[in-house]
Amino acid sequence: IAGITQAPTSQILAAGRRMTLRCTQDMRHNAMYWYRQDLGLGLRLIHYSNTAGTTGKGEVPDGYSVSRANTDDFPLTLASAVPSQTSVYFCASSALAGGGVTDTQYFGPGTRLTVL
Amino acid sequence: QKEVEQNSGPLSVPEGAIASLNCTYSDRGSQSFFWYRQYSGKSPELIMSIYSNGDKEDGRFTAQLNKASQYVSLLIRDSQPSDSATYLCAVKKEGSQGNLIFGKGTKLSVKP
Image (cartoon, rainbow over all chains, first blue to last red; front, side, top):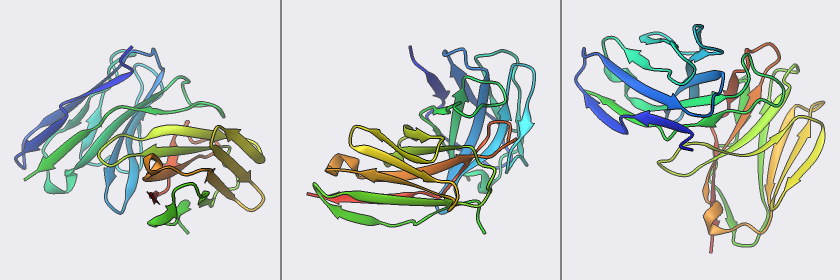
């Protein structure tokens, strides 16, 4: 069981280009999340999905979009990348839709994105 | 006031000592509390969760929760150099769709 996989591992991207970060989980978790992690700012939620077909905005959603066509996949798209989107991006998942007291998030290995 | 606050460190302890990591949170409706460990260049890894006031022990790790004072702590007994990492405190607020609020993390260094 792989858990959560993310692709690519790292990417250098020219500003203005479109980029999709991929996230796949094989745990049949209902909820999935995208975070970005920046030095001095910690982990911040970009978008989330409580179940296939639904998505929601997190703390820093501007410039990003997501879709959740099925349970396993939760891609994050940067329509027109800007240098401020340089960050490490983590995908996470949890079992329960909408969370519960004991619901726990598990993280993928991350994608390091540099926008020049 | 920030929603989840941690001392950024670095916290340096000698091998074999007890490391004490602290976290305070602002929302009294918070229900669930998590400690993640993150090695440099790696993803966060869950090490402890706690939901009720008091202590919860798991091996060398003890999480302590005091909802009245709005703090949660993590004690690491018999600290090892392999415990050197950044420790992230995360809090789940009531009615937050299950979303976590993370502190910025405390960097722990265990010296041999």
